[in-house]
Structure formats: structure tokens, C-alpha cells
Image (cartoon, rainbow, N blue to C red):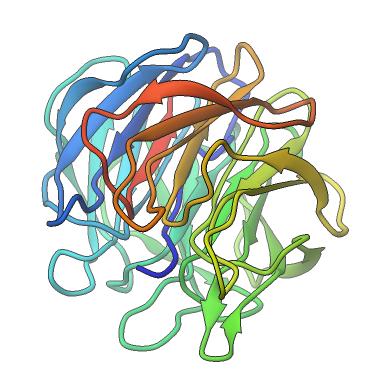
Length: 311
């Protein structure tokens, strides 16, 4: 994609897990690769297993109670409604979970740490989507309608925290180009999203993450319509308002994903495209500001991937 689909626990709750899992993507062909990192350390990722279906432009979310991550949607040759789950603290192949309400790619997802709910939002299925649908992460079954985003768009990202039951969807693009839109939902309820504010730079294909302690969400990378972006900007999730400059990624790239943990205040951005598929992993300290630092490499360079964790 010119931009990306993104991430998810994306900072869900404040649990103690320390494993991040990156799944799917495209390395020249659609991938079923799952690989994992220990977020609080640095180094190369390790093979985890395989997704149920090879696909890119997917998203993922998790909760902080059942050690489960769910990968949903994407592109397997056409827009997909597939949901598959993993047990994050173990390794192995993903298992069928159910279906999204609407098959779509280039979507994003988030969760909270209290209600065992994951919400998938936005995307593309022949037209730009404003669909929000939700699952109960610790169970299996079909997703349920949640409401609508403020703007139908694709190449979107999302994050949340574990304190205010709020998920924030940011960036993306529609027929008019890249967007700086931030809108939010109350994860444990249902209904339409509400305007939050604006990113510092309009872009799609960004990733997002947060931590469970400082109420901060960080959006990173993407494409601003003219060039690959290294921009990192942050919001205070429990409030509303415009994002603030955070620093820069180590490599400007789009189609990136991100995840975090609940122990050492660290977010990791992985993969993407800087003109070709990237294996770059870099990390930030979420509660501070500044440039990202090299973490290591994914097992396979790829773009259009997604990530989650057991935090």
C-alpha cells in the first residue's frame, strides 16, 4: 500500500506481559509469518508460528486477561473478514476465531484492559469504510456492530489506554488524500466515534502504541502524500486535543506497525516500507519524547503487517 494498516493492543491495558507479536504482511507476496520479541529487551525477533490465512493490510488486538491476540481482516487476494487468534505467551499456529461484520483491508484495531473487548475500525472494501465492529477477545465468534467512525477512511491506526476506557483512531486517507483526523470511542460501550483533535502531520500508513501508566498514545511513521514519514507525535488519551511532536523514527517508512508492554514503558515500531519491505524494529520510551532507537530486526522484512502484545 502507499500507506499502511496498523496495529493493536495498541496499548490496551496495563498488564504485565512483555511479548509483542508481529503478524502477516507482504515481503513480495502475502505472508502468514508470526514472529515475536521481548519488548523490554532488544534483539532479533523469533519465529512464533503462522496465521490461519496469508494476508497483508490486516490489524490485531488483544486484552490483558486471557493472553489472547486476535488478527483480523486484511487482504488475501480480496478484502478479508477472517479473525484468527493466538495465545501470546506460547508459540504456534493461529486458530480460527470467527468473522468481522464486513470484510475489509487497511483497517486498524484497539482494545482496553477492563472489558475484554477489541474494536476494529475503518478500512476499505471497494469503498472507504467507517465501520466499527467489536469482539469479546477471550471468546470466539462473529464480530458485532459497534458504530461508525467520524470519517470513512483506510490506512488508519489506533491506540488506547488501560485507565479511561478510550480508544483513539488516527490518520488514514480517503478519496481526498491523507488525513490528520483523530476520533475516539468508549471501548466498553457502543456508538459513533467523536472528534478528538488532529495529528501534527496528516498521513496514512502509520502505526500507533501506548502504555498503561502515563495515558499517552504515540503515532509514528506513515506517508504524508508526498514522502515516507519518520514523524512521531503523541496525545493524552483521556483528554482531547491536537497531537504534539514526540521525535523521529530511525527510518522514515510507511505501512508500519507498533506494539508495547505494560512493564517498562516501551513501544516498538516494526516493519513497513521505505521503498522496499523493511525488517527494522525501533523503540521509544512512551512517557518521554525523543528519537527512536534501534531494537533489532524482524525474521522477515515486510510491509502491511500488524502487531499486538500480552500487556
